[in-house]
Image 1 (cartoon, rainbow, N blue to C red):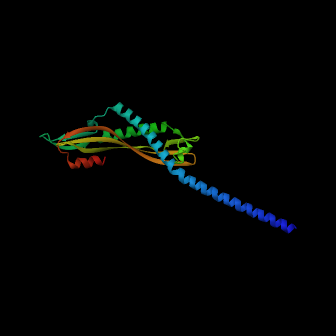
Image 2: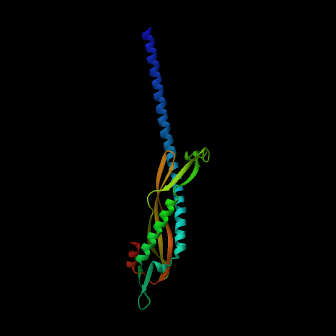
Length: 217
């Protein structure tokens, strides 16, 4: 009699363990499927918000810096002519270029770090990728903060502006890394922006050597 009871208990324990194992496997499968569905959508949302936040902060800093300094083309380059008025070369002005890069880098990083953390809220349903659930469900926070320091470099571009005319533009290229996070996920995004600082129309052919020198700024 005791032997039969022991058998029944063992059988129930085995069935219970089997049911538990099946439930656990189903839960793992559900988590994996949910992760596969949610992760790319969350990454896209996070990248978009990180890019727009960085663009807003950096744009405001660049606009303020340009307004305070009122740059002209002559602040960054000097066009040299021969006796006949022909273009000989376009010379970069290293001191002003390095000064602008340094000051703009400091200002942008100050603004990024001062912003501390940008955040927004998005409906949970929007992370599923389903059109039916988009915009529905409880809202969760999406946070963005800078990772490390942003870098600034100046580059120039020569393009044709008509017969025997060349347009020379000087840009500030800002690159920053942003980290965005939602519950359970964290994403790093690298963003890059270009802002025009100055431009000028140069009459006459610009020597090739000048173009190479400017592209290596």
